[in-house]
Image (cartoon, rainbow, N blue to C red):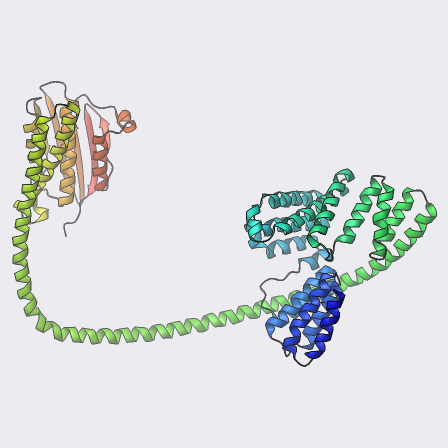
Length: 582
């Protein structure tokens, strides 16, 4: 890796006067520093090159440099640098949301940090069972842990681990995220271990920490692991609290030169456990000295960060207001353009319409006379064709009825014979409608009373050898409705009278069927009843027969629902709106 850095440093000199080409070399150098864990150097290279070439690079390239600088500033936890970099982003990047939750967290504003993180990841939180959702749950746990809310942190870590394990393996392989998933599982287990350590459960924490180290080493291989020092500190603390001092000392010594702050802190605890007061005091004094210095630095940085953060937030608000102002102006401008364009198009349409109207007006005078002759000729031909069609339909219905009657006489099976007769009745009803229609010039002039009487006569001729039935017909002589509704009423009455003949009357005399149809405004009222034995309404609703289903469907076609009752016999009523004949 060192050789690569030397190589690209030499390459820089070749393109010193070409910022566009040098940009890509700088990105590679930043990546190399990042890979070996030199995050501060990576941040410095990216940010300095951004400042030096602010006027010569494209905005996309400038924004990319700031992105690298921001990422590395977060790695070294430099709050001031992160605020400074994000303020520069306002100048060159088109960003709807800023990652300032880490800044809030490092200056102790943990509740605000958590809120900011959730707002930034709103879309991810909505998409459950995804890789990003599981990692987001872990990060929410981290913010709770920084706020010392260990129970909440443990809840989110456990939930994150569960979701990582539930992600489909084939999907992870397809997206090349299987190894990353295993690394994240180790990371989450390491966070759960910190919760166990806080609860005093070091025996539970230790295997989780070892798993985290193993998965990180496997995933990162020779790459730098930014959390290595922290992980070794936690392992050393676990071994110390489990009285495994020899192993603990091994991890403590590994921190020497890498993180002297953690090394001195743990070394003091190690010697204290061995009751080596002199050594413990020696390391404790060195640790306290560094700790006091860090606290002073951190306090100063925290105060400066708060001041800078306030300025940064004011800049964000100002930028949003400016963007809203520009958007509003664009909306107003676009609306004006749309209105002007619309008026222009309307004017063109009006002119075009007037031209067509004038042309048609001139042409119409020459066409009217020829059209009149053509219409009269066509009307004569259509009347001839209509008469021929009516004759053919009438003949076809009669042939169908005759064929089915011949077949009926050959059938011995009573059930099948009844089904055939049922179908013949339907054809007869249609035949009656057609015959009545053929005699009238208008679809609205069919007398409903005459039509229903024809159906009754047809059914009486069929069932006249069975029972004597009287009819009470209450239908105005001048009542006529649309042909479609007339036909539906005919089929309903055919079905009801057939049902009464077959099931309602057990006596040969004193059998009465009452049919009432009236009209008020455009509402038609239908009432059918017999004085037979009645029906079991619950039973027919439960076991719907073909006849009842047919009646309900026909009534539904009329736009209504039938009310079926058993009151001194069977009774069915419904209302429907008269259909226009135009």
